[in-house]
Amino acid sequence: MARDKGRVRRPVVSGGGDTQVLAAEEAGRAERIREAEARLVALRASLEDRVAAAREAAEARKARADRMRISLAAADGEAAATAEAGGIVADGEAAARARPALADAATGTSSGGDAVSGLARSDVVVHMVVRPRRRETYNKATQTRPLAGEEASGRSAAAAERSGADGTGVGGAEAGKAPDAEEGDDMALAVAALEAAMKSVPPAEREALAETRACAAFVGKAARQMERVLVAEERGKRIEEGREGGADEEEKRGLDIAEVFAIDVRSSGRDERGVCALDWSDAFPELFLVGYGDSYARGNNAFAPRGAVAPGYMELWSLSLPTVPEYVFRAQSPITSAALVRHHGGLVLGGTHSGQVVLWDTRTGLETPVAATQLAGANHGGPVRSAVVAGTANNLTLATISGDGAFITWAADSLAAPTERLNIGCAPSCMAFGSSSPNSFYIGTMTGSLWSVERHGSGKGLAAEYAHHSAMVSALSVSPHTATLDYDLLLATSFDWKTSLWRSDMSSPVYVFDEFVGYLYDVAWSPRHPSVFATAGARGRIQLWDLLVSPKEPVASIGIGESLTVTSLAFSSDGSRLLAGDTSGHTAVIRVTGAAPGDDDFDRLDAVLSALEQAL
Image (cartoon, helix red, strand yellow):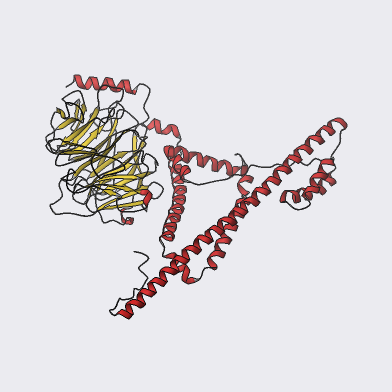
């Protein structure tokens, strides 16, 4: 749309002659665009050839320098042996005469060979220090690695900077001042070749090239890469400024949370909507998904006024780009639930208010879905309440559940037909899979009940009912730390202002957290610590709980934005960051510190659970 802004479109008038003229002009324009694209390809190939030639020349210079160092080492050894035998003393005047020859040889002039051969026969020993060159590269891999321990990496970077500044580190201050001449030559050649290529293209062809999709994609990608580098450098400085106390200070403070990153809602291209879904990428730890529902309620849209429909909208954000999303995804119906498909790189799964299930693929660069289900037949007949990706790479399950009681699974490569369909027989509001097997899962309902559901066997369907909440169950979360146990440990939040802790082998809750004031919208177990979880509610507060400290009150609490309702939570895979979104569309990344488990924390948690069970 931006490219059409400055262009004047000719009106199409009636008449055969005018139509033919316009058609001929369009055909000529299309031909000029094709010629310009072909010329761009040729210019790109020429530029690549020039850069390759420059690199070959640099390699040749490097090889000559290596041979020079070998000759110097041989001469040094010969002179040392001679000095030990006969006490030869180097003549300063001869050494001074040898230095210009050495400089010529190192720069690759024709007298280099004579200088080396003369040095081999000379009694002069010249000591030369060759410092290692620092070569910095940037790619996707180096972008993601430091994020697993961003505070530590910030300290390491600052320490390296201080070490280089005072000359005490590897290479010292002199190495920091010496640029990489070969890389500079390559860059200069590339820039010169690019400028020459651009000057050789006529203005009309340049305008035609600027209108091509390839040019727009290149400019967008280059702009994101530049901003990513600049923002990453600034983030490193802020992290170091805020973490001067060192690594041990974090553990001394205990469990704590603090906001470190927030999306600028005004910079987004969407209209203002609430956050209805959050998820982290497993392939790139700095990427996270934000799904936007409408402005009325949580993402399941169960409370939106009848007829309130807005197109679906989601964004994929990067911690390195706080102002612009990496990708934008759109759908015909409001998004109600979404998840990034693990083990499948760029796939994004979404459920909509119309009951349609959609898939996007970031590798296509398109905002529209690459696959979508039909709105009839054996598919969902109501809003999709939950979309979940469960299982392993070899046994992956894409599961959706809707308000009409339909549980459906899909293949990651096709949404043409369901791979499994199960009619549950109730109105589910949320869903969560067990930690040990995708063959069973748990649902919360609109009436406040909790059920375990079996997918296969003679007991297929609703298997066990747990004690009721007095209002709708808004979210479920299964602990990822119970794979070695005979039961699942799950948390449920409800609109009755309570959070309940359950064991899957018990029909009554282990404990009920009833100190909240207002509706509760989401809950999430920490993947790092077995006793830590977070809750989000209608008072705009995110509360962090630790069962080993106290089940009666949270150990930390924080508010985000100006909204009074936090709707969604999602922990990163290492538990060090927590995503939180609210009804105003504000999304924050919160650092969770002091959550490293101790050696005996699992045993202590078993003891706490046993004590809570006995107190029932």
